[in-house]
Length: 542
Ligand code: AMP
Image 1 (spheres, rainbow, N blue to C red):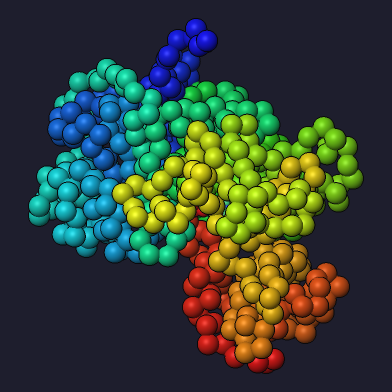
Image 2 (cartoon, rainbow, N blue to C red; image 1 turned 45 degrees about the vertical axis):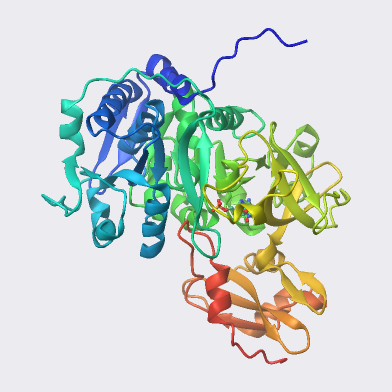
């Protein structure tokens, strides 16, 4: 017997219309390179419909890929909805990738048009001749840089004048399973891999972000997505904010600690989200200021040091809210909100719980399995295995990529490449990335665990731990440490600090001091760069 409910398609049109109808007077604030501008969802919705008309004028094909090379802004949000709601596919480009990777993703996705902020034109210009499918280039003046009058091989347009020529589009998306947007994941060796989100997956993920026990995004929020719109659709926050008419603060190009702190204070931000390196830079800038509007500082994308979360709790009274996800998981899949019992625990125990990524979000299934099996490890908080996921906003394969076979199991689960343990109440603790684990004499050492301890040292600004080759143990940990500005610290001090906290065989064999930990294109620690840099490093014990 079948249920007798209506087969309504879950599409972005519904999310858009919520903002258009109910969020009309709510604000979208954008910090451009030179100014702060404010608009409303009402005005935004009118422009977004006109932009749908622009895509018709440019004759972008059905499901044609609409690329963006842009900072977080209200205009970027217009593209976020105009492309999918007019049956095209949005493709935000990560402009921090290596140039040849940008060429790869534009050609691989077969982008037909690129919407480019004028301030980013310098990145795109040298690559234009390498693109094989791009027909149109639309410039968006963001206060910096200049659009050229012409570019060989493509038609050049200006965003605002195209809008003036266009007729407002009526949206008509009939299949929830059609593609809405795509993002390429850079957390990989070789070329980036394309993840294609459907209307349905985006709709359901948006609702998952509104769950009270996940991020609880709601109308009364003012949301600051520091995470770029090319990084897993700004972690879905711009969709969620739009759907419930929450105010949005788009930070534009200035992602400095000071700029972000100013937005939080001046715009009375309630929810802000970014990777750990962002929050490390913001905290000192919040000292002595009124942060009482904040209800969640969301942090994920990389291991969240306990010391960082505790520093927020001590300084602003609000610890970090850790979340876990990937480009392949839309991304929100686990969030570390404390349940009723956990809220009664002593502060120190709560801090320890916050070092986990929390529980899986309603709608997603997970398993932590022994290598090459589907057997779940014991939920004992100790036995580790690979974290695998399944669910309606989890990718089932990569876009046109033979590497899908390695990343999905035969029974259809996503292999995340993260190593995790699960405790008896289902909280997931990430131990490491499979490729970042250090194999020493047959034992696995978690680089994350050592980093967590290192970063709790009062004189340490950042630290990353990598395995370097060792003749006897095959690999041993090397600590790469950045002292806080104006501080000096010795190797002996660091080893003495770690000794009571870690097992003897986990203590790094050596400590090197570096200017900064290299970062990936999305601002995470790049362990690969460090491993390459220290591949021939001679450990004193070797
Ligand atoms: P990306 O696709 O760039 O978002 O990268 C996804 C990867 O980031 C995951 O597979 C994890 O390795 C890492 N990651 C995401 N969230 C966390 C977290 N809360 N703690 C540790 N690592 C994380």
